[in-house]
Image 1 (cartoon, rainbow, N blue to C red):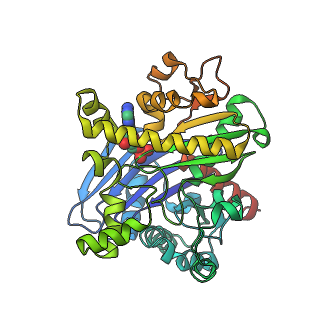
Image 2: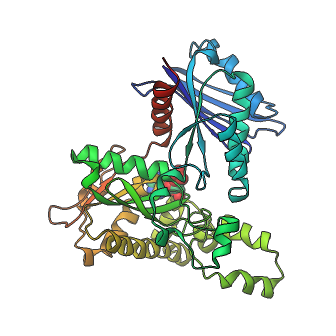
Image 3: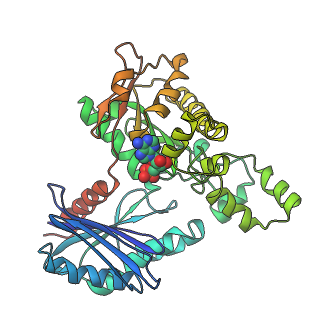
Length: 399
Ligand code: AMP
């Protein structure tokens, strides 16, 4: 069965076509700058890479172009051949605790959650609506970034604010990157050949967006992002945790509007705010040259991370493993080393040679003496979406 995975942004559409259940990737790519004068289409498949620059008016137009290109390269004769389409949907609120087949009710529920994710959910819906218009009979599945964290207990997900904010406005902690935290914790159990139910781990998704998750027996019990992805770790351009009093203080000092302050905290803060770049490779390189602001950004990133790991180790009681994933988690040996240097109180010890080895596969990086294991596991969110879509189609649609 062929499954298409779509990740729709406001002006972009990422796609990956799988043969299931083998999870063989048949094609993948990106349509970007949708709605601009010249949009870009990139396609990789079992043949020469295809790139084109042409106007793409909207997401439906992007899919129409893909449906024309796929047969030309022998990838797929028509969208009608698809067994299902899996969509990444950012916010599932309290309505969705698991991947879900999309029907009119589910679509409305995703729409109703727009106030909680005003940038992401409308873009995700554009992908869903565009595909529905082209192939209405094809089953579609939504996989939510928030769903994995719905297992958090009330004391973990509530903020200490007036209860009416929760009851009337759904102000609570939701957490994001759930598909990634779920995948790497499950992979850890598979690689260790241990039942997931008996495993306690902390998963560190460290990319441009970054979050930590405490996973007990395969269930998220705490995570660092909150109502929005702004809470928690220092990120590429997001501040992470901040005294809420800073908003009003900066408003009084500068006269900036709440919208502008929110934009700055999301887009101009984090590593970029401190060092002018959101790219950890640039930060590391400049730090080696003696750049003070790069060193501060790096140290701040690691310090915040260490606080979270310490706190989550306490919540879990017993820590079997720490898992690194995301662009920084998978590739930055300096970040892993700096973090682990500060975790000796937990008996955590890195194998320095294993940490330095340049590899792209899943691998352990702890020393023989380490009390908890340390793993680098590349994440695969699209793979999970393809699996979940395949599973739901097999269970509910076929036969
Ligand atoms: P992601 O959002 O998961 O794609 O991760 C993006 C982040 O990973 C950026 O901050 C990159 O600088 C960082 N990154 C990618 N490769 C490396 C590397 N080799 N060393 C350090 N950071 C890296």
